[in-house]
Amino acid sequence: MADEKIELLVCLGTGCESAKSDVLFAKLSDEIKKHKLENKAAVKRIGCHGLCQQGPVIAVEPEGLFYCQVKESDIEEIIQSHLIKGKPVERLFYEHDDGTRIPHYRDIPFYAKQTRVVLKNSGHIDPSKIDDYIAVGGYKGLERALKEMSPEEVIEEVYNSGLRGRGGAGFPTGLKWKFARSSPGDVKYAICNADEGDPGAFMDGSILVADPHSVLEGLSIAAYAIGAREAFIYVRHEYPSAVASLKKALKQSYERGFLGENILGTGFNLDIRMMEGAGAFVCGEETALMASIEGKRGMPRPRPPFPTEAGLWGKPTVINNVKSLAAVAIILREGWEWFKSIGTEGSPGTAIFSLTGKVKNTGLVEVPMGATLRHIIFDVGGGVGTGREFKAVQTGGPAGGCLPKEKLDLPVDFDSLREAGAIMGSGGMIVMDETTCMVDVARYFLSFTQQESCGKCTPCRMGTLEMLKILDKIREGRGEEGDIEKLLELCDTVVKGSLCGLGQNAPNPVLTTIKYFREEYEAHIRDKTCPAMVCRDLVKYVIDPDLCIGCGACSRICPTGAAQGEKKQAHHIEQDMCIKCGACLEVCPPKASAVLKIPISKTLADIKGGAQ
Image 1 (cartoon, helix red, strand yellow):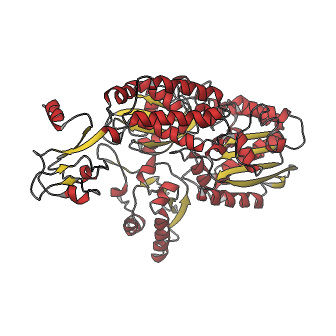
Image 2 (cartoon, helix red, strand yellow):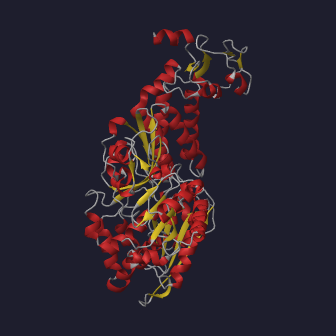
Image 3 (cartoon, rainbow, N blue to C red):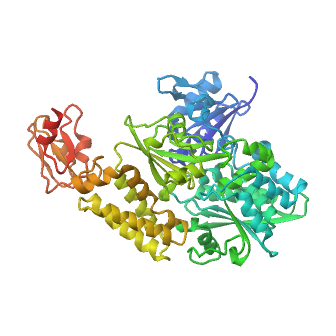
């Protein structure tokens, strides 16, 4: 082991790359050459390692060491101390809550509490090298399918595994393939839906960057199973790293005989084409996606017929998500019994989430289906990272639901989430603390789906707009008795009358925030108060003259001149001029803490009296 060559794995996932990890990669490469260490160490590109909160990160193999928040100025010390003197740079190790440093990433709770199956290769192989993928068992599943199994046996394998679609709907993958296989016709298509557009979601894009061949392998197996000779990957144009990664992987797959004619000498022919979407959120819906591939405007169409009967260009078509196809490659390699041993009876396998928001460790998380929200947020994510109390978690993207702390022990699977009013969705998970206003959250997500509505069906187009107007009215302190009931009635209409999943699920944030946080809506309407002090029209900024030291910081930063006063004299804020930007609160020195954010219905005397 002592003579084994050291590999420095630099994460070039989106999060780390935005923090200049590409600069670290170049610097490391140059320094290794400069110090003539090529025989001792090598620098390797990897996709997202997972722990985005600590980026940029560099993993060191085979030791399994893990450097966090690395800066360009740290590179020389890594070279001199670690590579030349054999002494790791301990100050760059992950810092635990108790102040101790954890050198090995496997011992960091974020990783230790996960069960990585689909993400097993992410952050460990160079996605630009097909040999790296083959070395860890890549394309063994495709080889087994083509050389040892009939298409029907492949479908049975996937069906027995219990795999359900990871795009959000949770429909049994094997059953979908059975329908497509049995549909008449010589021309059929397989599609990978990589049109990930949820705010805060980056799972599919990260897999395409870190492990693109797993998706190509799964898509090839799907095509073989249903009898397709042509397949498509529909990926968002806004994912340039994923697009580049896929282009390189496709080229390598053709060169190595995993795509094209007579694949692996079995007589099976398959071509995969990549299509770039223009960014319409509705194109994540399968019928809108197919319309886009056909060159039409991406708009959903009524079903039936379902795509497995009449899909792309009217031919039987199977559409699967990135995570579903990556799982297929593993199922064919490891066997359905192994896959089904993970997770729950009704939802086998693992679930992947992009854990974001007010959580200590943001990043990519993979856990067995059935793991609780508490396990994901607190054991893996490290809990709320703001020092405040956990309030809610939003799952399933903009059309998902907000669940309160009373639901922390809810098992995360398709059926349990749906029963609670949320959805699995594509896997976004946003953690909120007590400073979050749930009315504001509902409004934010509804505004997104309203803007992204294709407008084809009236309930979605007009219903979401009317809901948005009511939410704006409530946030601005103009809410009236009966507004909550109007919202619920509109939600029901939009759910029942919308053509596709965008409209059918758009009311979820409103429904769940009313269900679990109705008292916040009532406070906005009846008391004209935002309990979380978020809604701008329901708060004001005041200066306590007893605390103000007259430093003038507030008046210098105020963009409208609302903060006024003489030097070394108590200042005040002219309410008619204040735009409530909060800049004065941010610059008020801690030794004074004179600027206060209070409900608009209260006075400074009310607040000080309450404190007493």
